[in-house]
Amino acid sequence: ETAGILTQQSFGARFPRIYKDADYKGWFVSTLLICAWFGSLIFSPIVDRYGRRNSIVIASVIFIIGSIFQCAGHSISMLFGGRAVTGLGVGALTMVVPMFISELAPPSSRGQLVSLQQLSITIGILISYWIDYGTNYIGGTHCSPGTPYADGDSFNPYTDVPLTGCDGQKDASWRVPFGLQIFPAAVLGIGMCFLPKSPRWLLMKGFENESLKTLAYVRRLPTDDLKIQAEFLEMKGEVLFENNSRSKNLVEEIV
Image (cartoon, rainbow, N blue to C red; front, side):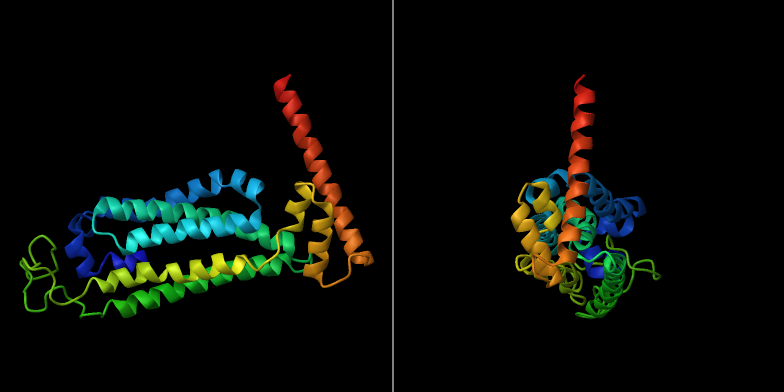
């Protein structure tokens, strides 16, 4: 979607350096990806401390804040800041969502659900390109239809923008795609409030009874069902093993 926005003349008129400078444009696009990588690395302590569900809500809020800055951007620094914040949210969600899915889903469905998540991301990218294609026509596709290009070949934001600004293509052509990102992130953040916490995370924090009840709830079986008991004991054994291994490594580092 960003690639399409960067070719819109209204965006170029507002931010000519990003539009014309290929290196600067590359940094603008890469800022989100770099911060997404960074966000996936630093978000792990938050996930362990506040839980998978709450971390997804936090990441959604971060993403929304970044999207607002991009949508309302009136300076290059504001756009870059918005891209960076949005990237942190994307990286955090990329890390924690598959974890949340795998810890709630039955073992037989984990691979299918995580694959469905990846497919949904790809479909979302496709939809975003079509949205950007449609918003490109808000006010027309040219910054100033009545102003001929100075070099007669292509649009140059330094020479082809009237003093009063674009009288053709509107700023909404690129602000709307940035702003629409807020809606799915808000749906995700609000929707997560109605989902249960990860039973594995609850077990890691010592809430065994709540973990067992949550596991039974998501499997739609009573807590005394043999399948629930077997899965709960298996999960408990894995958590105890991980905690013991972590404690041994900590002791070895101290010694």
